[in-house]
Length: 221
Image (cartoon, rainbow, N blue to C red; front, top):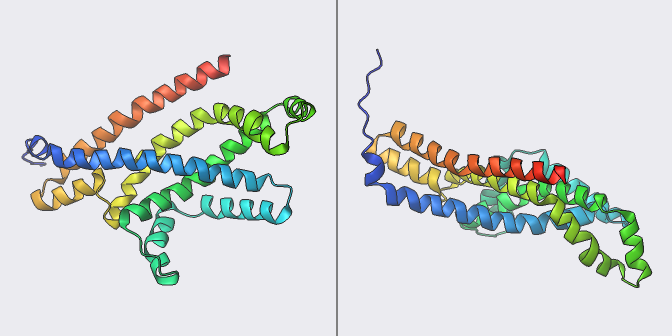
């Protein structure tokens, strides 16, 4: 028969320690989203380039990233870059780069869909009034594309919060790693990881619900 003596007092006693991990998780996720937005725009631009080598480069990079596991990519960044290129990265930097590159490939698809959804009439009108291709892109196309992809970007932020837990594998002090360290010293994994799971849920679920409502409102306009 199951017999276990719960010790929930472990949580308030070590709350500040766990909270520091949660802060690192949220900061890392936000920073990753910013970098992924820039990387996604670059990949989307390459995908739609009229110059065939650039288009092949964008498509190839995107397909490789989307079709390999994120954990493998993260470990590659952390362990292989120092060996092959002599680039020594901290665990935090490796996680930031790994998550940014992975998310960029998916965000690029959202950008591309948004860019292609801009009416061609607006692009032609911009050229008529004398705007160059670059001006048309940054003044007409990109603002509308970003507006249309905002729900997808918000959803990606939720995914990044969860993916950041992979940083525990390379000792990034995010909340999951904090839980592992605390568990090894207190021998209370049930209470600690249950609490961490609840914290993830309390952050991600409201965000996910808000994004769904946002998407419904946009679709009804």
